[in-house]
Amino acid sequence: MARSARRLGTKPATVSELVSGILEELLVDHRLDDVAALLVRRDRVPPAVFRLSLPALPRELQTMRSALRRWLEDIGLAEQAREDVVTACGEICANAMAHAYAPAGGTVVLEASKQAGGLRVVVRDAGRWRPPQDGDRGRGIAIARAIMNCVEIDPGPAGTTVTMWKDLDDAR
Image (cartoon, helix red, strand yellow):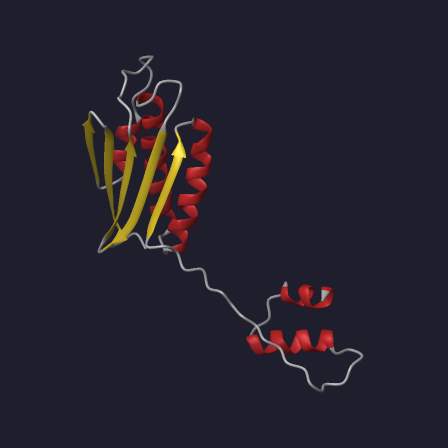
């Protein structure tokens, strides 16, 4: 089995070559009688909607970026479009974490879905936004607006929803 596992780690040109290689490994000292091989390939099919709920803690931003980047790659977004979306989401999620919740924290929810001609992203929090603690901040929304095609902010007593759109017609 160890020899078969090593063979599975190689990249043969065809499935037939892979099966032949495994059989060769298994049957080095045996007859080719009563032997069958079954290989199953599971294609990764990305979910239609990316959804991530994370604690409103800055250390969680890397988790969000990695998971979102992987999903965007799986749905076929070009590298520049992926990085634009990941950057914008990072800025908006960081804003929600910094402004919506007291130090006790809360939850930030990120949803993304590929739609006709674009990508729709929604970031929600359930907190009340506080004013910034220092004056050398406040570029996150400007950054998101510069790299996304549309950024709408809907604040309310039950939290804030930021909806963003990225055109994908020429971003594949």
